[in-house]
Picture 1 (cartoon, rainbow, N blue to C red):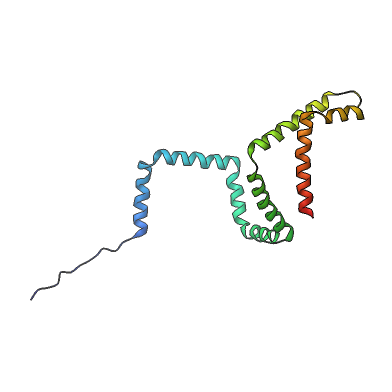
Picture 2: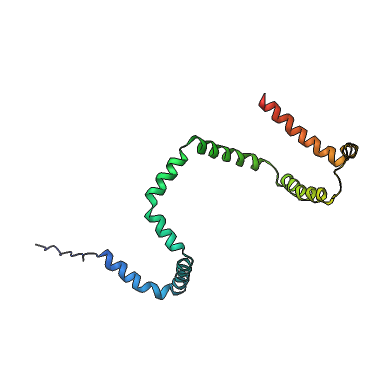
Length: 152
C-alpha cells in the first residue's frame, strides 16, 4: 500500500519578510531615500514636523472644535453660499471678469490723476453721453433690473 508523502510547509514570518525587504530597499531606492531624507530634514528645520506633532497630539480637541463650529447656522449658510458662488463664478466667462478687473485700476488711475477740484455737474452729465460710459451704465442697469426682479 502507498504511503502518503508528508507535506511540511515552512511557517511564514511576515515581519522577517518585511525586514529582508527593508534591508534590500536602500540599494534599489538610494536616490529616492536620499531625497526623502532631504525633505524630512527641511520639514524638521522649518518646524513643520513639530507643528504636525502638535496637531496630532491635539487632534481630538481640534476635531471637536471644527465639528462644533461647522454645525452652527452661520457656518452652514457660509458653506452653502460658497457653493452657490462657485456656480455663479463658474458660469461667467473669464473675459468678462478680465474686463472688470482691468477697468478698476485704470479707472482709479484716471480718477486720481485729477488733483484739482472735483468735476462739476455739467462735466459729469457730458461724460454720461460717452459711448463707453453708456455701455457700462447699461450693463449695471441690466444687473440691477435682474436683481430687482429676483427680489420681487
